[in-house]
Length: 189
Image (cartoon, rainbow, N blue to C red; front, side, top):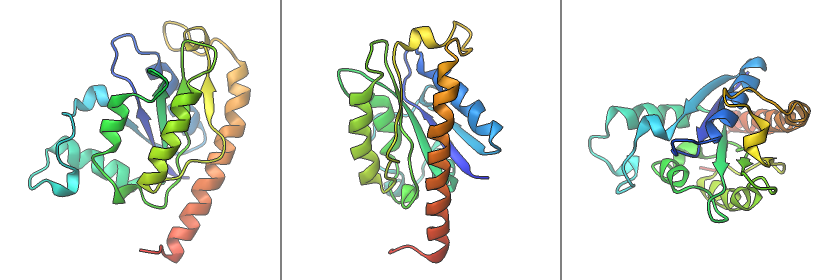
């Protein structure tokens, strides 16, 4: 079907987002998508000094990351909510590139330990992805009290989320297909 980049948004030692990301990775694979799993904890990128395109000799990990971003048909960031915003590590990971994102949709997943599921972070991330040229689909997927939704092994404990995620992924696939069809016809630049 499509190539989807799932981008983890936390590097905290006890991060809950990795459970969310692995669950969504599996859901996408069950729908026959290829998943590029991007984990900033594994990348260990320095704070952005130069974008990829400004580097004379980018390190191999950035070359590999660029290839995933460029080849992806859509993006699924998994964002925590820190102080009513997205995480700095997610923003740092995204900002190494620009043109690679153009004319591909994003589907924002947010979570929090509180009752609002990271919706403030999701709203701010919409602005970021719009600027990257990868506008977000109209729906977002929020997970409230994430610590109760997955068990300590990352297994889904609240089966209501299985029902909710299907509609979200259906919508994302529609946008991925629509953007892919239009890119085949050409882009404005």
